[in-house]
Length: 455
Image 1 (cartoon, one colour):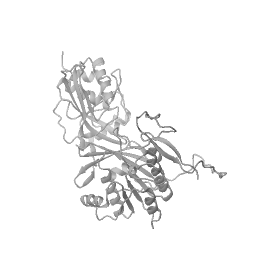
Image 2 (cartoon, helix red, strand yellow):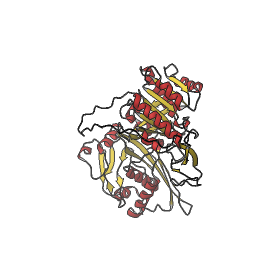
Image 3 (cartoon, helix red, strand yellow):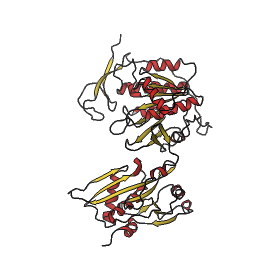
Image 4 (tube, helix red, strand yellow):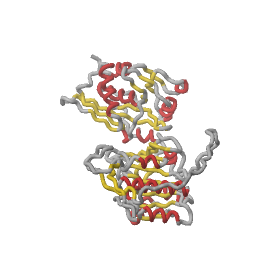
């Protein structure tokens, strides 16, 4: 009998070492190395001589991947047009954000439309899942339900089913365990092995497998990074418990764009789609208050208008505060430095607070101009025009640089009743044909000259 081979595997990054140490040699985390069996059968010697592989040309005609509509337009948008049979999806998000609610609604919609959906819950009993289904009003949907964490039991149930399911939901991947490994459920080796087995089942059977993943305190999906490489699509469900809005964001998609978002509203009877997110994020706007600017942003192919709020106040501290919600902190520091150096505004002795309304997180560099406008408005006490939008990237010299999708941003603003736009001076030809009054500026000082208080 071959003696089992063990190694010490980091439970944070998945790195392995032959000897135990207090610090992981990979991620340098402390006390994360756990002894695990990595090979119980000894070295495997391949007796196969291989087979001839057929090569194809790059210009071969490949049909588009078939799609299954989920019944939720926002989810179809995020996945690139619907679920692809034989694909594996990983959905991550903070606890209580609504991952299980969303997937249970999707399973019910597919089951009611004639598809077969199975839901495996590893964190809740079947009675608890039924209570949620009754609250959502989908208790009558013919969804297959089971509370199981054993990987072998799940695969046997799926493989011996009379008909191949169209959708299989595993909630969550961190609760599964394989009897071929001695490590505990949730460990790096268990998560990696269970994910690999389920992805293989999806490719072999043609079923769509959706895995729910927990996230760490840093907002990353827990477990080894390799599981994100195994699956075809990675979705993050974002939101704040104090807001009713939820953002489903794509960070990886082999069958569509990887930068789309879907917007949902959390209600007592479940998640509801938001067809026009711009109206949602601007619904409670106070246009008469200084320090508020409307930013015309892009999330994937979708233009979204959102309010950026700023508060600049004299600081009694030696080191003024800098607080940001929904935007990059380093980006704010850069804008403040440009305003101080290039526009002669003395903001170094003031506390600065910046907030993106509605709980949305933006990474578009075109938000620079809107954030600068909100900061100057709050500092001067002069409210910005109510019907104006702002977008443009600010360089370190203070110049306003053009950004992409200008025509789409202007069209969305015009649709929502805005009348003017402060934009970069270099506009594309497709962006000039708009009903909005364009205020094209070359330098940030042109904006601050209109709003900054007179000396």
